[in-house]
Amino acid sequence: MKISDVLSTSKPTLSFEVFPPKTSDRYETVSAAVEKIAALKPSFMSVTYGAGGGTSLYTADIAANIQNSFGVPSLAHLTCVSSDKATIREKLDMLHERHIENIMALRGDLPEGFDRDQPRDYHYASELIYDIKNYDPSVCIGAACYPEGHVENEHKSDDLRYLKEKVDAGVDFLTTQMFFDNNILYNFLFRARDIGIHVPVLAGIMPITNKTQVARARSLSGTYVPTRFLSIVDRFGDDPKAMTQAGIAYATEQIIDLLANGVTHIHVYTMNKPSVAARIMDNLSEILK
Image (tube, rainbow, N blue to C red; front, side, top):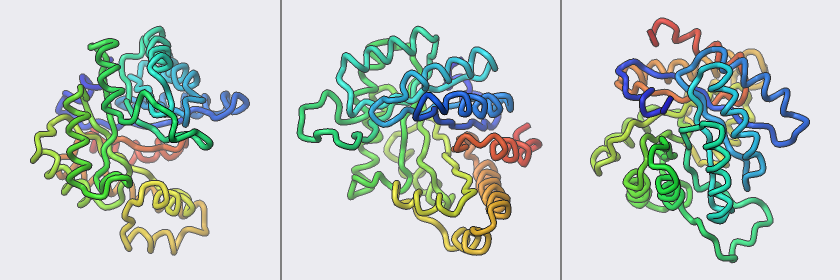
């Protein structure tokens, strides 16, 4: 089932992101966690893609298992910046063979040690989106967006212009980077709609269950962390059980506020934690009906 069809209904959606193992010895552990999350029957699940494509086979296999064994639509991530066109064609063939019809098209990051001066076939996600559409126009394509602006773009107006290029290239929906202040998303949505971006936007929510995740989120994306949430981390960060409960409560409150204000599509970054996914879904059980 295509994600665009899932998002076309008036009913709120709750979807989960999982990531594949980095090494083969972790495959069974990760697969078991993913299956527990799939058993919750979210609206769909996305499966990330390792830097440099090292886990691309795992991504495809896990995404196929999610939809074939659990009947949950799956979305396979695909990055392009360190790949040539022939490699991307091979990856698309692999996804097609597994009947995966939803792809999250991302630029990705260059792997460590990659020669940044060597010629590359891909510099932007929009180039990958064009190639996916040329490969199979029926594929449903998602892309990333950054409510606070991409860290590599100095001006938010430039960021929105590049986002519009991705949408015009054939994107069916967008998923935001994590954010911890809903006002940031509301402001972003107003600006995006104002320049003609009208595809569905999924709000990306990261439940913080470990205080080290805060520093990592800041270093990776520069996301703003409200004082209110920092106080929660300061108070409960050294108590793992309390921090988990507080982080899930904060994420739940974010989601409830989003749904109340008309943002009906929520995508949760689960970090492969079935208990976190289950508790959030349970907290929203009546709201999502």
